[in-house]
Length: 109
Ligand code: HEC
Image (cartoon, rainbow, N blue to C red; front, side, top):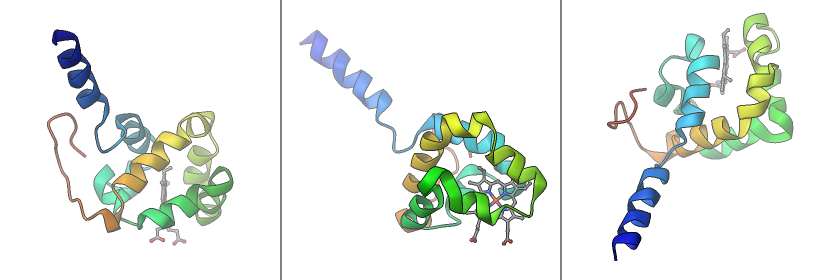
């Protein structure tokens, strides 16, 4: 009984609707130009985010190709390592998800 309660508590902790890692990545790489994380995620619908991140984020790279500072960030090793978490965050909080969050007790974005 006690053990299952513990497991339930752990699951609740890890099953947030978004990836905190993805959000941190957004804050480091994107928010300087696109503003708070949930606002940035609402730029596109979830399918559009999926396409942005297809083929190692080829479309995202194309969109920013005239912006040196953005290109540098998107071509960084940090981006490569965290690309998947960032994509998951953007998709989970995309415009079509209809969630407008500001703070949820863990993070403000
Ligand atoms: C140095 C500034 C800068 C950074 C950093 C930056 N962007 Fe952008 N982004 C822009 C600019 C400028 C545009 C508009 C390009 C255009 O329309 O020609 C843009 C466009 C976009 C678009 C297209 C929006 C639309 O309405 O079609 C998306 C999506 C996007 N950025 C996502 C991101 C993500 C995700 C990151 C972080 C990995 C990021 N950007 C980092 C400057 C930046």
